[in-house]
Length: 99
Image (tube, rainbow, N blue to C red; front, top):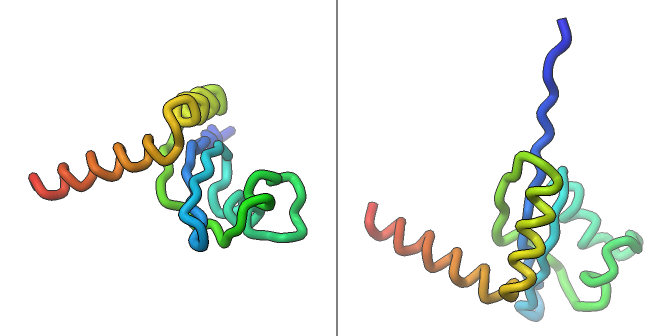
């Protein structure tokens, strides 16, 4: 019997612990991708190499498909990563206070 393998994708926001700068991306493996952003020898994550880290994961959202994750990333970047993150954080904080 063949089992179904369902791969999740993630839209995520990182924040530099030294500068406070935000970065947004998408991936199928959050842990691996965060390690790549913080690895000085990994050259494919150029933006987070130009700006000082270390980088920490501050927000993520699961998506069913890579396409959905890419659309989420694009909409976050269009709005502004920091602005989007602060809006999401405020929304979560207000929900927490209501409960």
